[in-house]
Length: 116
Image (tube, rainbow, N blue to C red; front, top):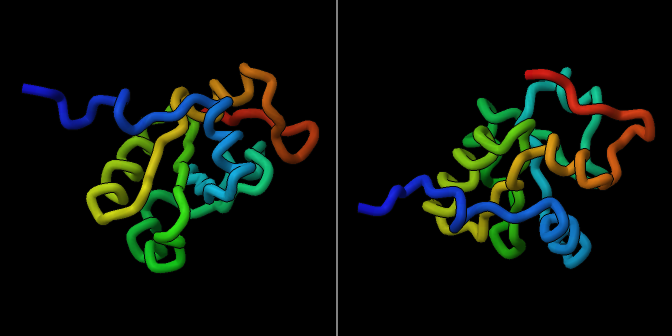
């Protein structure tokens, strides 16, 4: 039996996520407020994981959506749920840790990846 939560079919690399964002994909950060305040990807929207279901109608179904968190666990849960609901949903592989390790930008300029 195939693992329904296999990351390979739902994850995108940090580089691909940046490319998709440039092409118009939405980026939704599902981390806690203190984590987002420490550092976030430019252009991302913050919606805490616990508020995601109530905010679903505000996420555009006509554009890909990439969920992100610190390591990729919370974002994978979000991406699976949204994909099941008909969205073109993805999870940032390795989360913001991988994004930052690849030298991709954070906001603010002195931003960092907070511990969860």
